[in-house]
View (cartoon, protein in one colour):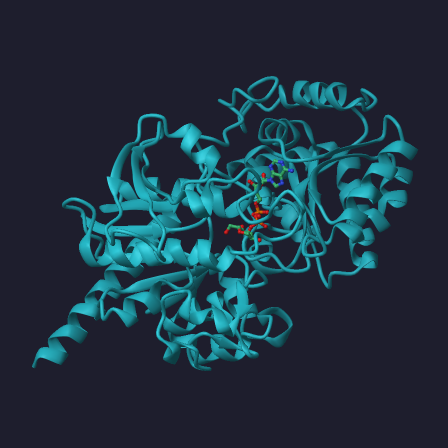
Length: 491
Ligand SMILES: Nc1ncnc2c1ncn2[C@@H]1O[C@H](COP(=O)(O)OP(=O)(O)O[C@H]2O[C@H](CO)[C@@H](O)[C@H](O)[C@H]2O)[C@@H](O)[C@H]1O
């Protein structure tokens, strides 16, 4: 068994603010079937501690971390995932979001909090926990970006894979903080952590890891361009030979319409009839008219510019004029929240908006809606379109990143062949979205074709097994390269 330590700031079901948690909660379990013993290191926020009641407390491998006392809480979740929660009260025992305080601003010491996570990961790499020592570290997003810097500073020779889930979140902090992070000043260098006069944790991860991946092949290519690279496209191009894109999968146990305790009635590709009962239940729950003829579009998303939610608001009159309904679950930018609230207020029975984060309701939306709208300006992979496929809720998506890689557009040829699974549009403009909403209404008008697309969508396999195998192969290649490098050095 290859031993791999995952390092990340979220992990479903312990703590989740977005798609990263879903990946960290599911991929290690999928890898177990492929001969990889993957364990997860994450911060012990209060909600994590609450859920790990049976945890065993272990000393930190490095004694203290960045001068603070702490411990590791070792536990196995109900799903069988082995985790170490990093319990450093000075950094993590606070009420609020993992990244943002009650005042809506980032915690002012985020650089120290997540440097501590990376520092402890490097200590585990050096000393192990008990008899378990990783052979490779799989680190995720900027919160784990300093891991290779600590490994390098301590001359610990272990391969690292850095996965970018969203390049827009970069973890950029004042350069003067470098010594408080416990890194030698020489690491503030333009080839390592320096980014426009500041320190970027994300840049450190990309520049210093053995290999870099992202969560879809199309996003891997897009990152090489100035439009998508957020100032790091040059570095990404420089690392092209070590870069790849591997699609996310979904946890088919958690997201299964045939066996989902959070929906009104079970259904499947073979027996889809009960999807209608979920539509009714959703309409009732949200105060929408019980209109089975109206195509019900839904949104489950952060309400942000990234997700293109302004484009959807702009097209709401068209969606309503053609007889559709809209159900929105999300939270995010104040003007978008206000826009969707107002839309619900002005269109009772036709538009419903729930502002907030609600995991159970997200399942009912996927089960009850006919289509899910994801007009993202960029989308590294996207998970909600995959849940939509599984639940026969046709994704209407922009052609970018993972959305481009997972949805087959209902053009005439695909409809004819019975292979269409949703709708795609490009470029990401209000006009193209409007045109594609029209195409969706036209297909809805041909119920037989809609049902065929729904069946094709539900039969698409986006479980983790194929992608887990790609990760396993990549780990093996990295371990082999590391061995060869060592042999070369000792010769
Ligand atoms: N209000 C709400 N209530 C309940 N659940 C909600 C919710 N809002 C969102 N969710 C859930 O959060 C997850 C969001 O998944 P996305 O793929 O859209 O990821 P996100 O953009 O957060 O993360 C980034 O990382 C992931 C993982 O790699 C990439 O897929 C993605 O492209 C990238 O932007 C889904 O499970 C969704 O159901």
